[in-house]
Amino acid sequence: PPDIINDDTSGDLSVSEGENATLWCKATGHPEPRIAWRREDGQPILIRRPGKEISRSRLNLLHLKTT
View 1 (cartoon, rainbow, N blue to C red):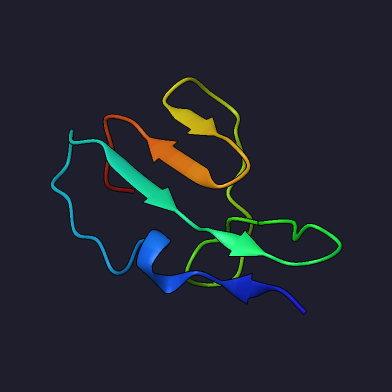
View 2: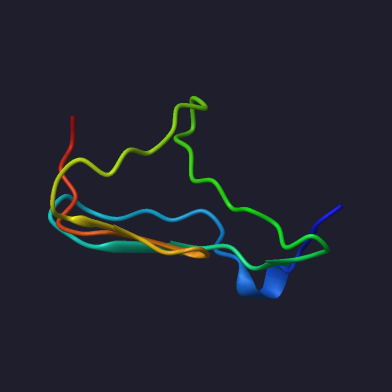
């Protein structure tokens, strides 16, 4: 099973509308863990427009807006 490295993983985050947010998750294991980013309700975060950048262990949300 994967090991999540808590010191290198983001916790709760609050930002204001128009600000940027960066979330990160660091995990190790064999085979190498896959990191999936999901909303609080369990739905996946889809990259459909500019303003979101995703890498294996980091999620950047740019210029956040309320919905």
